Length: 338
Ligand code: 6CS
Image (cartoon, rainbow, N blue to C red):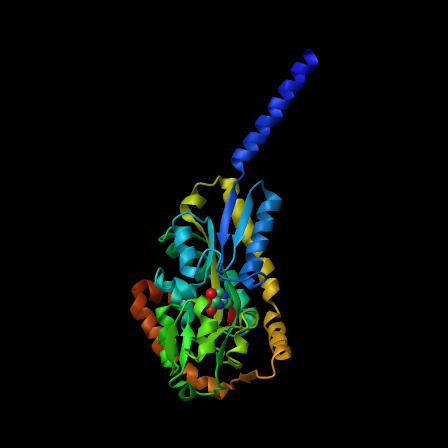
């Protein structure tokens, strides 16, 4: 009788413990813009694994197309349907105009080590951007680079004049339109889902993206001339719905921050050498592909058009944008020693 009573109390205790653990564990939803194994997915999976190894919570990762386009997942994150979202500044321009700073051409260097050092240390990235995202109900957890931007076209090009009359697909971001107009092309903003078909049918004649994406999305099949213009890096951002984040305990907030830091470090290791590997795969898969690396002199003709884009950025974003630009440049100077 006594033993039964003891067992019963122990079982109830265990049940209560289980229930309280269950009450505190949650399934968090996290959507990004890419496919399995792509850079944003590598980040998301590393984040998920860290959370699941260090807590009772689970993370459900949704990839491109499962919940819609980039704009759809951002809306869902702002509405609290998703707890986490990865949206690239290329699509965030209408929500946070200052995020377009990444599309001022030739602002970021091409050298990977300097770019990584910039993302590790920049005050603009770690202090200014979190405030801008917070105004939209978003807790910015990480901004990170994915790869150097490369332009693909229906024929090789070396000068802005060669881009005349070419419809170049850009992400839906007004400043990118300015960049490609300045480069002499006709900018064509489109969501990702329309790019492959647009190139295949000839509605657009080119686009820009990092090499890993040109390989994984098979873009080289329909846009085989790759041109390294050195004008920028593809940057992305991972964040949480801020009401959700503020509602977490301090320990859980720290867990989320630690998981984001772990995912960031893991992703930077992943992108190291990725562009070369992806280019080798592309060249293995296709005889049609051409690779043009613009010379310094050829780049100069494009770089000469950057100041007008920078001016437009300041016009679009006012004093805050101007201050951000100044900080961005100071942060770059600190890491490149220019
Ligand atoms: O060009 C785009 O739209 C896509 N590019 C990359 C590298 N990631 C996601 C984005 O949707």
